[in-house]
Length: 280
Image 1 (cartoon, rainbow, N blue to C red):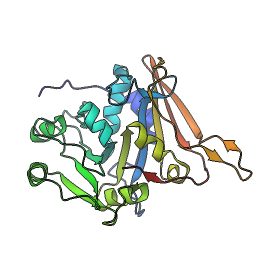
Image 2: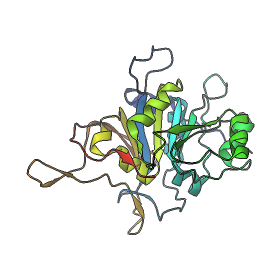
Image 3: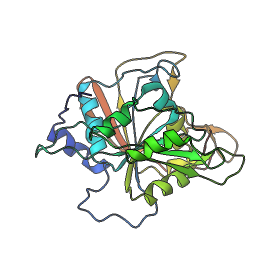
Image 4: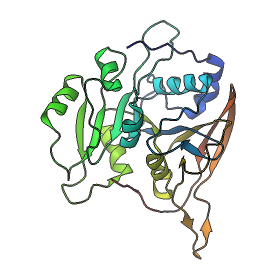
């Protein structure tokens, strides 16, 4: 599988530095959770895709290179099962390095409570792992579900990936974000970028979960996708009087133009509680 190497200018990388996790040379904090970066590409109407299950390209070449640079700066990259099914993503890093060495590869994390992702040897992420140009995924499944099929488990583990059972062995297939992040940290992964899809992003932006986000890096493409698209839409919040208020806000923002796109970086402002579960 041939993939072109991408280049991300050092000048642009320096602008992102305040919004990224510490480099490996800096001792990791004693926090039980990894550094969490929420990053995704969106249209002017806050859409991620034209329709559920439809692969939609929004990022221009410069911001695409930025995404791969971000992957090189994180120990893990997380998507939901919907993204795995719709996009067959590689979830690897293709950015060029200054010394000509292979880039650092993030560990793919797939949130798949009901084991909907039926991967094969031809799945892109596994092909890249086999070729040494990426890592095999860790797949988070609900403990309430059945044991993963033996053949898929053998294929995954043979490439260095694995299934991780989450939660109690009960009737619930929902997953709590804090538990997900604890499981990631327990694997020795000190930073994670959450890329998609819509349900995963919206649930992480929910008021209870948003405080878990250390940094948000959002690419805004100069296009509208229109009605019927897949939108980022965290749950509405209510104030003490029961009135609807904004679901969230970014503070300490920075805007970075990249080609025809613009990248918005910031921190999540403090907000009140709401639902914290990812539906199965």
